[in-house]
Image (tube, rainbow, N blue to C red; front, side, top):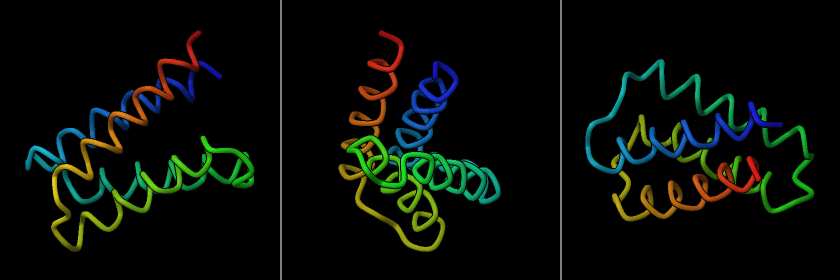
Length: 89
């Protein structure tokens, strides 16, 4: 499960970039959005971690189309990074 925790930390960094206005390419956001949505389906949305993953995946996909306030990205990044760090413990 350490690979999934690494993906969480990488996703948090991507969310920080999106919140700072340094958005990566559209295909990059689509791939990571899809990864987080698929990762959330592993848990079948039964725990809080799966809900965090699906919300981050949806956020990444929506951020391609519209501008979402940066504080939302920073809050999601913090929660996702925290989840990734705890998966290493």
